[in-house]
Image 1: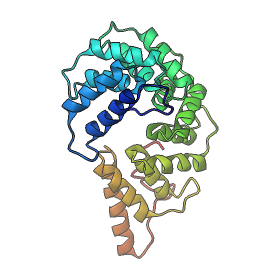
Image 2: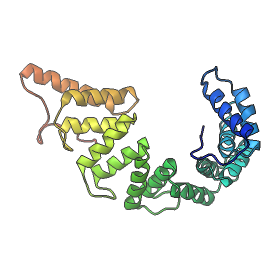
Image 3: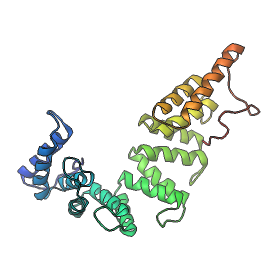
Image 4: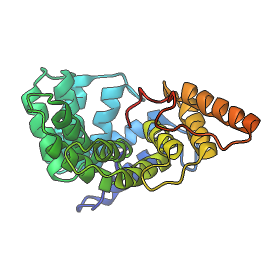
Length: 270
């Protein structure tokens, strides 16, 4: 549910209906009541409230509290976007991209996404980064442009953009290879619960790179955290570190791979 950064002049009853609809939809101060939330949302949307129009469009798109109706979703999101609601621009781009409630139109989707990105929408910035990185949606592969989009989305705290910025720094894609900067991005993304960042941070602690001291205990903990979040490679990584620590303890050493060792992570790219 979106909330206004700035509230334009609207009738008091319209603003009040919007605010009450948000509280009911979120279950703030009372039990969640989507029926009443939708009723009030419609009052606010019909009264011209851009955020209410955006929220109502989202509910029609997802079928939360109402029967899913893609056409109604497009109608309300279009009104909201025309009234200056940034989130509506992005949501509308996704409907055009998938052909939900409107004929699929990649050109229109990209135009809306670019407009949202130009106004600083984090998801729009991140998606344009992905399209530039992979060379998708009619965009030529351009890692430099991708990194700019990722970094701008990262400044807004976007978890996936923080991870992607770190990955670009790790690989030197679109920017200078800088493992210390990569670790900084990974730490921020990990703090926001990004499993890939948690896993990659574990790799850096395992190898003692990126300005970090080698720490098998912390590496194992990070791999276990990533595993609990469903990261595919994390369980075997955690098991390998645990086995390495067990062998090191039995031999009275500190553990850790050297360049000539059979590295359990040799096939994993930072």
